Length: 388
Image 1 (cartoon, rainbow, N blue to C red):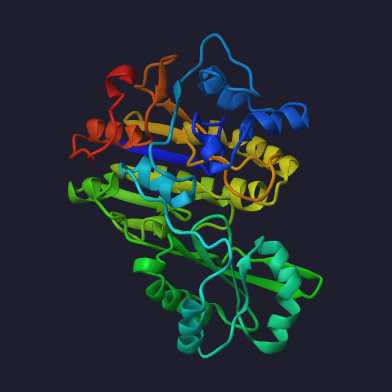
Image 2 (cartoon, rainbow, N blue to C red):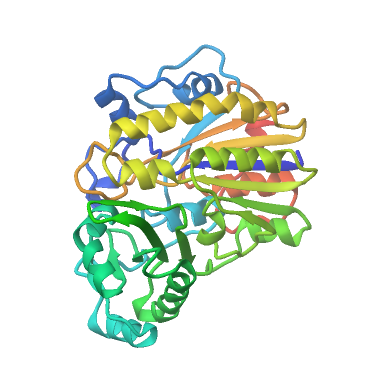
């Protein structure tokens, strides 16, 4: 094995973790509850790989002879957000949760931000991104002041109309906020949220950018790149890891664009890691509590699975997984703390092996390190011997 692709279906959780109630999540199950609410979900290609054979999974059926190996994982880290999930997949353990601001950001943060950007801010409260631009978009256009908001996640989000605050200026504002939001005021991500349109018809654009913290330790991405392997990041992976350990990157505009770019990397003469995030499940459907759209997006991905498999080389391995849940049938708009699926496929990977329930997402990183014969992260236990 010389190349491993990690395909993260952002927020596709498969059932509440034992400690989910501590995070305010009771009875959550992103995949299972979507299927229940929508009267089923059609994922024949993922089912062929073993999705329905995962222990305790709901909403999809099992088959006799799945083509891949399969299992699920608990989350060791203290959180249920994008950064925590991806960093754990890459071999880190986050003991202290990232700071959140359920009442908006404190005055000293906002006043410093306003001073440095030369504008006042609108909002400064937890909100849905689509709802707050409906509420404040017209005032933003009239005043030129950016909209600042947060969520249940550790994020400082800046929304601005692309014709009012050009993208370059918006990105500069994000970098200013990133410098401020460190230490005692630290947040996991500062996010640019550009939009276009007229009052009553605003639309967020694909020009989102995330400005993350540096991972606090070395990840599998660092160990792979230091060993001379390529680490190719698709979608917001570069943002989540703040570029650390990544040798090539490409941002994407949609799930299907993410699949296209992944296939382009598969068709290069490369060795190492391809790390893809498909964000639409989370951003467009989970947070907006749109079960129908979520179902359709999953089915759209499923239709692309054969194409992905056709482009795998003999020495390729594919891992399909997630980073947390975001049950669109649950209350609020927050992520949900859930098990994640792990599906493993490759021409040299054993078929039909149940790797069971892993104690940490970091088992994925440990397995990749084992296969590529590189330094292992501190956390995680390899399942290489089960699947090869």
